[in-house]
Image 1 (tube, rainbow, N blue to C red):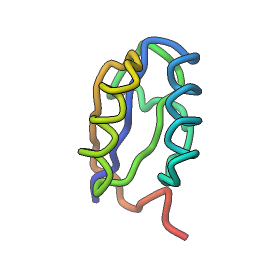
Image 2: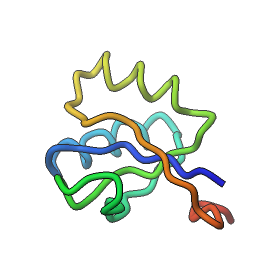
Image 3: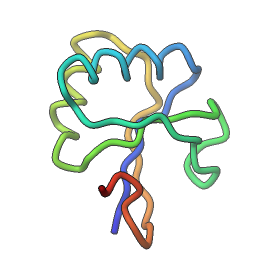
Image 4: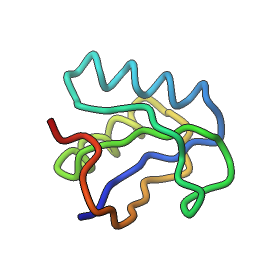
Length: 81
């Protein structure tokens, strides 16, 4: 199973995007950035695959600085209830 992460150059942008997305009822979680994805900022947002296109549009509209959205294979989804 793939997990998807929004990567950031700094913590401030990660927190800002989380607040924007949470207000819009998107399911996001701040998590440590997997080292295989980036050595920049230590945190990223874990997002749902089905929300990727919406989140990309929000990032552009709100001009949140990111390093992009990346994915890695995981055995289980960390956001599963």
